[in-house]
Length: 98
Image 1 (cartoon, rainbow, N blue to C red):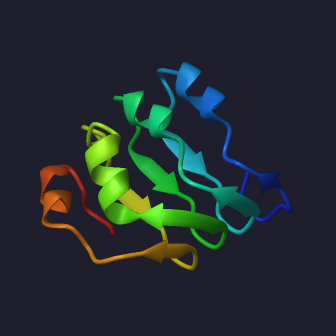
Image 2 (image 1 turned 90 degrees about the vertical axis):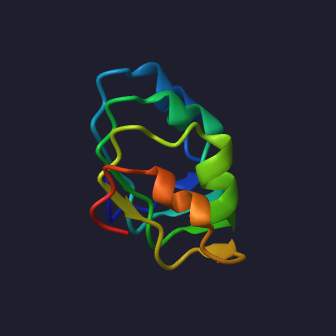
């Protein structure tokens, strides 16, 4: 679903797909925060929300979401995220690409 002109918030209803492994929402016009509900996706390996208009902090992403136990790739580039990179990011033990 990358490279479209989708706008608004990322649908929290994506969390109702427990087998979801890849979310590619790169290069759209999504705004707001990444829904906390996505943290329930225990099999999610790849989350790419780069090049949107998302706000918030990486700290919120890591602490609020339950740490995505299977996440390997996390792309947050070119958004409006603020703050530093939290040490708790190390709790994503399967993370290979940040």
